[in-house]
Image 1: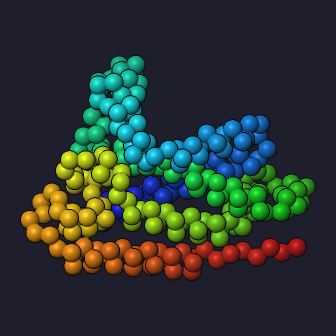
Image 2: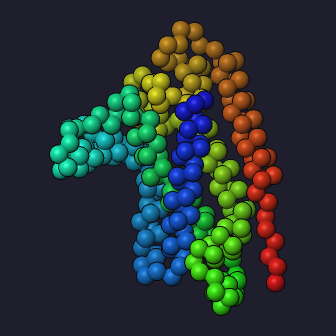
Image 3: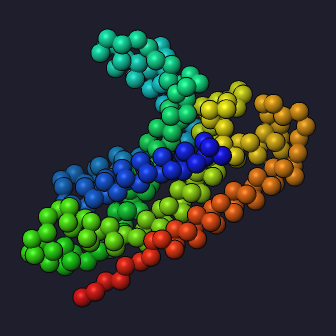
Length: 229
């Protein structure tokens, strides 16, 4: 549960902030916006297994991984990114990398639906880029943010494949999440002597209730802002 909450909270904040930042930049009229949209979204069209393998073999690898090569350039020693202390954060970074593009497109669709007249009027009134974001963009994206939080909650509670990729042989304590615990309980896994389908079903019910609770609370907190002309 602790790992799942960390993925939902820390990973969610980083993913949403990066996604919204990219969306705001790419809808500001910069050159090459279509190329950058495609490039940022590309990890979503790659198999999650292939994406995780890329991070494990070519970025976090102890002997020839990209990060350790960078560490060597600055005179440091190789770091065990997939060791017990750092494997959770390595897994989260890889997961965030594969998620940003998806939520970016959702935010872009929301931003593009905001009437440009509001921005033009605000600019005439002397509003700078930060004023326009916090007074116009952010309030009118409450519905989109609510949708993204719900989707992210579902992704966090059904976090399975990345755990199995980063600890393929035995499920490690640093990477285990409720869905993996459910799987190990029902089908057998590390430390499981007797399989218990009932306990696994109970885990599934609890996760469902968590998603419903997050959805209800999010709807209460983030209410749509009505446009006033």
